[in-house]
Length: 230
Image 1: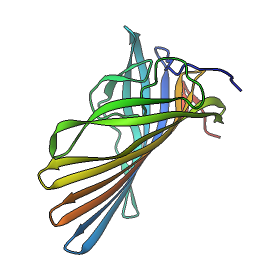
Image 2: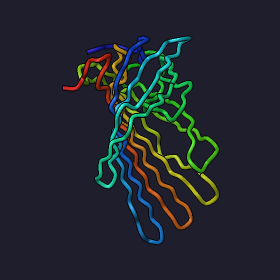
Image 3: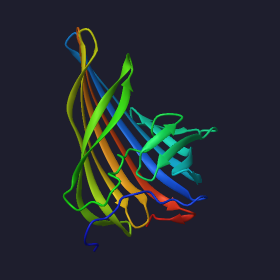
C-alpha cells in the first residue's frame, strides 16, 4: 500500500490502444395534466482509444465506437459501429482542452500537485443545455477517499459531487441539477480504470414537469491487446 502523497496524472504512450466498456442508463418521467409517462433506455458501447501522439504537453486521442447495443422498452437492438472517429485532446492533469463532440469519458481534472487521502479540491466546467444558448458553470467538489485495488491495479478512489444547482433556462422554466460520481484511477500506470457518474435533473415549466436520471459507467476492459476481463 502506498504511503504519502501521490500525483494523479495521465501517462499514455503514443500508439497505446485501450478499450473501455461504457454503459449509459437514462430514465425520464414527464408529468402533464396529472398524467405521468416514463421512458427508459440503456446503451452499452465498447470504445476504442488510440493514443495518436503526445505533443506540447497534450495527448491526442482518437476515439471510436466499435460495437454497441440499445435497450428500449426491453427490446435489444444492435448499434452499427461509427465509421468516423472523433478526436479529443487531453492534458496530463485530465483537463480536456479540445474535442469534436460531447465528452466521451466522465472525469474531473486532477489538482496538478501531489495529494493525500482526505484532500479536497474544487473543479469547474462549462456546459450548455438544450434550449439555453448561454453556457453555465458547474462547480464540482472532489475528495481523495482512499486507495483500493481494482482489477489488479492500485487505484486512487475519488469521489466527486456537484450540489443541487438551479438554472433559469428561460422565463418561467427552471432546471435543478445534481451530480454524484466516483473514479478509480491507477496512479502508477496513469490510467482511468473505472468510473460511475449519476446525474439527476428536475425541469419545471408551466403545466409540465420532467424528472430525469442518467447513470454513466465506464470500465477499462483491454489494453494493447491484453484483456482485463476474468
